[in-house]
Image 1 (cartoon, rainbow, N blue to C red):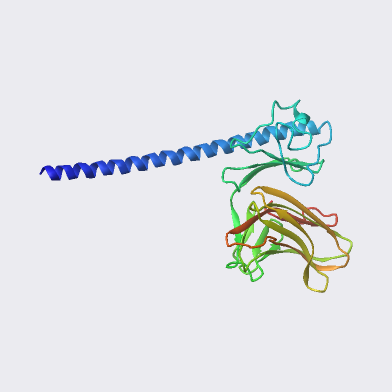
Image 2: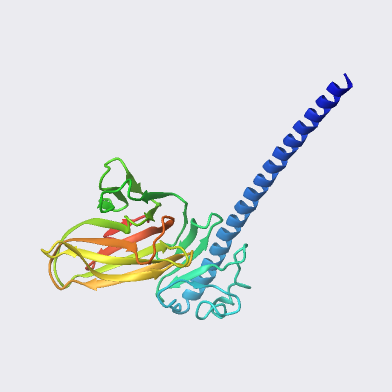
Length: 299
């Protein structure tokens, strides 16, 4: 009887320890989520405060350009040109990301953008002065890989310009604020994005702007492709070196011949591609001539 009682006590004790462990695990998980949510709310507030200060400064003078890429808004003045002194009249100090990083600034001296990476590292909170709007780009994406796209991994663009679909699947649509995730392996180096634009006359200027996220140590190439009676060929490209952050890129090309079709190719420019290599494309815009926002993905 004593041995049975001891066994029961041991079983009950073990159950208690298991329950306590589960309870502690739940508390830790809730606490971590709470911290992440709190950090993300602080990031949103910081971006909004920065946007207000920069807008007030812009009413007095031109903004400094960011040399074609995002720069870090640092308090010590070693990041973005002219900051923080430009806005010191409108803000006490430039806030820092709660996890130790810096908020990002991009400008062509007329318009500017602000960006913060959120806790999940892929989602971003941004401000655009051209639209005057704040935007949360959630971690929500359409994945392109060898198993779902066509053989050439093609996305077809549609009107209205916020939609596209996988060429091989009429039911898989890309819409709204979603990034395209391109998974790369030895058989799949990238993705073709075919636009609904046709019959473009020569001397028209073609422009690509995009946000891209590339892993550190990897390189992605963006190219403009078109058909001038010789099939779809790549005519101009730009490489983006990965840094585990969203980057803004721009590529321009003037047609020397009439083109029947136009599109974009995005592919790995890294050697020794491994199966875990992937990158994201977001807020991609293709323009030609004097038309603006001719074709937009994820914006």
